[in-house]
Length: 395
Ligand SMILES: Nc1nc2c(c(=O)[nH]1)N[C@H]1C(S)=C(S)[C@@H](COP(=O)(O)OP(=O)(O)OC[C@H]3O[C@@H](n4cnc5c(N)ncnc54)[C@H](O)[C@@H]3O)O[C@H]1N2
Ligand code: MOO
Image 1: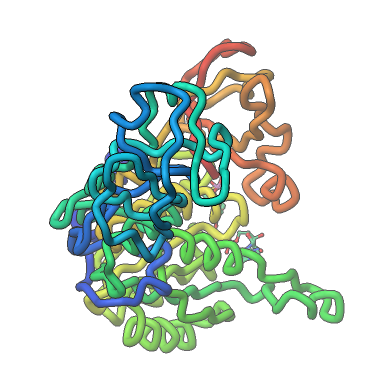
Image 2: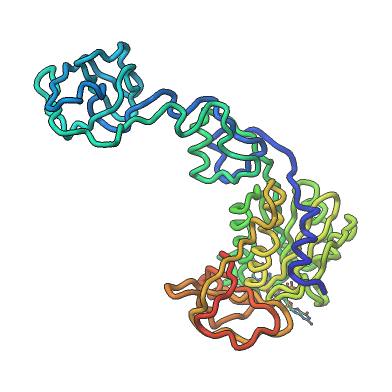
């Protein structure tokens, strides 16, 4: 059985982008840039005022108090056309172009206005309150590199570059197949004995969309091989990536892998020495990628976080490793004993570090909702005590 790091390495050859498309800025949130963003305008476009006040020449404030004639106004989006002459000032507002000839802006709080004159009594201080043209970026500057994930702050920069369309990597189309005779739609289990609500696909779909997938939908499937084979063929026809949940283990009705065999399933790995989630598997079938997650809900969500997140990072043009940023946090409580499989314990962040939840069962659903971190515990680790640092991953 391979270890966790080896499994992540085996994801890489499958995790490359699927092609690019142009989207509008309004649609670009959470997409990944396929082409750098180059500024089509500078920012600021001209020298602009950083404050509301009066644009003046330094020479006119050499002797104080000074009375200057207000020669005109400069508003953002407008401007004062003339040259600032000796003895003159211009009423100016934040973001407005600084008139030619002006050296600084004096904030209005220290200026007294007397009709069309402005009275300057105090020395203006070192700040000129002028943002120079291009001081943020110049026309032609690269603001965002290829491979940048477009979050809210990056969208501001892309819009500021004066772009309305962005070239981004296409989102992989994802289909989720949930297998298990016992599963039924949430809202119907209480009317049918022997059933449980199908819960995992909702979490996997939500996580996958967050990680860059375009979610096509899900199918709940009974453990009958013929029907499963048909569903697999249909999913592989339309989706780039199929996630199949359950049926990953060695039970007599565990058909998750056999259902893809008529489509030429080639396994990349099957079973990883981790806890939970040992039965996780990855393969290729019909030219698509197939990821098999164990059915136990905590196992499914842990393996989605550990394998689906890096896979989707790669499929959307990012480094798969960018989805696995381990940080260090002190332990706020005790650690359960770790056996011979690397363990990804569910923890909760607290003021003094990470607390490992008491329920570490791989079938847990209540405790799953209460955790926000995975704590990576290497095999054989013993005697880890509160205060010691551990590696954690946002979950
Ligand atoms: N003899 C062995 N038995 C098991 C092994 C093993 O190595 N040898 N591995 C165990 C481990 S570890 C896990 S994890 C499970 C995973 O098995 P499967 O992927 O085949 O999962 P299922 O049997 O289909 O389901 C397990 C459990 O989870 C419930 N489930 C499944 N899908 C969903 C869903 N979509 N929503 C909610 N709940 C779901 C299901 O009802 C079962 O209770 O195998 C161990 N066995
Ligand atoms: O490894 Mo399974 O996913 O623990 O129960």
